[in-house]
Length: 192
Image 1: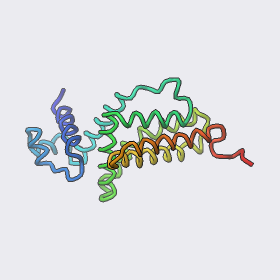
Image 2: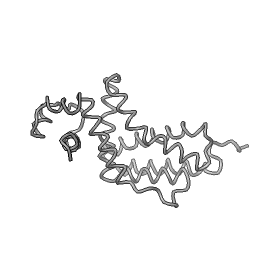
Image 3: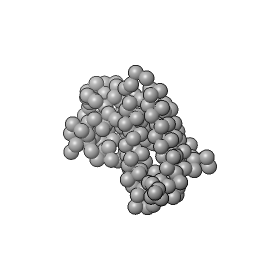
Image 4: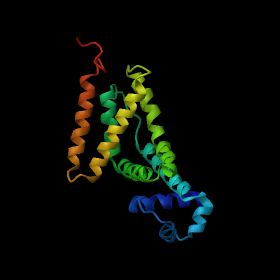
């Protein structure tokens, strides 16, 4: 493992423990037995360093999620599958970092918005393609993919901060149930 990859792994471990909000390079560098100047040398900027750590978190999450099996054959089943994957250790860690980054993007959009999009886009396109495979019209799939991602983002936040995480799990199940109710006629086009 080269030094940059080693540092990226250390940065990820650090932010998993301490979060992204209020991240300061000096304490981070000290924890990694290096200097803040060396971190900038390897990553170009604080944003580059954070982006590399988040990309590594995303990679670990993608590796930990097995491809959906044949039982994932509806939009509702896909939502249940994604929610379950977000609930395991890798999913919870990646979700926490994503939400931290989202908060940073609300405070300084010019600096952090691109990083949020970079983390979200690997989820959006496969989800959109899966929706089309389940019979959702091509033109409607992007909006439904964003609805699913936005709903799961909000529920993931609720699961992280709520006193009763089971409440978010129940809400995710209810969301999947709503999608399942509409599975034969996804948007109510054939209703009288």
